[in-house]
Length: 247
Length: 387
Image (cartoon, rainbow over all chains, first blue to last red; front, side):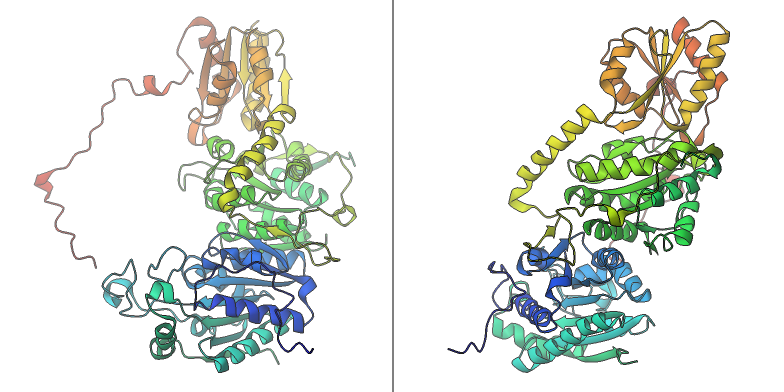
């Protein structure tokens, strides 16, 4: 019997708690496949966030650290500077990275910390129950924007890849999605590159993943995927915003 | 090893920390502790460690969280308002059972306060400014020599009990120069055994390790288990210094710089035929309550001398539990005690006077305060509609 598909060794057997249709599980798997394929599993140390992925420290088979909301890049900095041979990632959501942790992500990029950031952007606070995120779209309803996000009151969504691309220390920035098989494969390629960069010592690398949150978008999985394509992607175009890995 | 050198407090502390095996430092500029990160930026790399000037105190303490998770002797330093910002990280460090060293070179508060030395952060240090049931071991040096030697003790206690340890100094101790000696040989942390809980890169087939703060359903068990360590620390790790305590009429209680002024007061008291002793807590948590209570039974009065508005005196009162009258000689917000002013308070303790003794409610005697709204100034107006 030939095994043609299997669970990556870098994932544990603990069943994930993520909601049906959520993108977290897909991204976890792509990261775990990357650790296996790059043969770095033994030296990966991950930082799990506060938010839906707070339990990510259970799902990855590598050593994991879970810390305060928004502080992942600072924690990852401490790990990486103490153990330069470690492959360190910080896994963060949009409220975590683009709101409370804005200073930490910007300055990790400024210092060009040789770490990998996986940024899940689903335009909503998930774990706390659907409040407005810094990435919530104009007009999108959230529990703290019951009439929809109004730029006059709450401003406009923030595009992190575009913003960080202005920073010299940011070496690789790509935005991907996990709504179709084709996009999942592209996301895998980007995630792999972001970790390869760290192995090569390129510097700060971040992959932003446009993800779906059927639960807090109050949508079916199908409707959520449609929302990604018709609403999210116009605001958050997919693509490479910076790639200085080769230089 | 015991060679005497003349050093500035902050520099003695930084050198002492490197000698004690600190190999990660993250900090953010704030007066009056800037010599610490400056020293670290110059010498940490030579020692094989890492120095990071963080974007904020919040980031600095979280960098320490990450570095400490790898088992590296890690530290940060700051001064009062900066320590306020670090409270989030400190409660997370406590929750994740991570050892580290935090230095507070206290300045005047509250808020931005002043840049002069003060002791206003006793509550913050010993009660914890972060959320939840946790403790931090607090060491209070009163000399440049202790500033240089306490980092080793701090790291050892922090690692022994897997918790943060704080050195609580103040702006004058940090800035002043004294002759001092290090009482230990420099430690090479590479030669220390690995910690059996730290995240690492050489896994050699062992099960994965997690350092985490969210305990969910296990929180009660987690907190009650940790409390056993706290109880053990209270029983076994109290440290203090006694000066003429066994046979005194007035027992002074003071920590840090205040205790130095008390020594002057004791000398002056002796010249006047008064019997005054000094009990100096070196660990503020755990507070050396048992020994203090025992000594207090022999004194007519206990006088807490502190550069704050009555913070440490609460621990003194808890320890003495009403057996002996406890008074307060307070120098808040950067005020500095001297031998004469303390001696005045000592005499008040003995003769029933009030000079030099501080009581919050007496302080407010005859004082009335009222919030005034005045319609003749106009009305607040309508704020509906937001922006």
